[in-house]
Image (cartoon, rainbow, N blue to C red; front, side, top):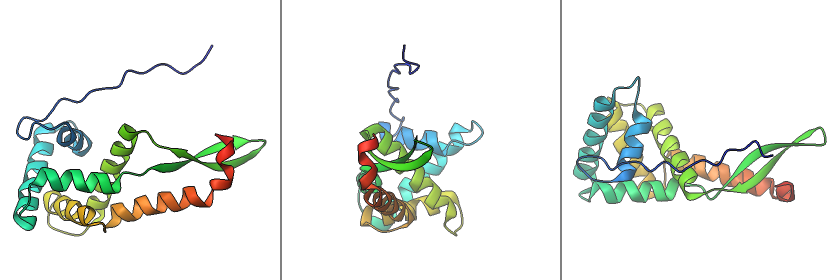
Length: 155
């Protein structure tokens, strides 16, 4: 019998202001020590900064940034015959979005600046334009998968 459980996909609720699930996913990843109101405050300041800097709808910029950062393939370590191979695997869209959100937030935290709202807004703008640290992380992931394409038959 298989050890893997069949998991139900969690459907996130939309946030109160933008009524968007993607925004709520981002808030849940920003969440630190259970302070959700602080996470909402950071994200709404970020959206205001994005609107001020780009003169565009911040939801559009957020969607565009996440779409550009979302990876298509990733590598997973598989142990076969005593040696470990990095096997390239395709990513499901929900997992890709979660990875993109995580990479954007990690890149924003590494930036130098005043506070998280400003750093996140600049990272979102950069990602939407196609540059920034999160885009670099995606390219690195794709290069690793391409380099290890010979091991694809170990799936």
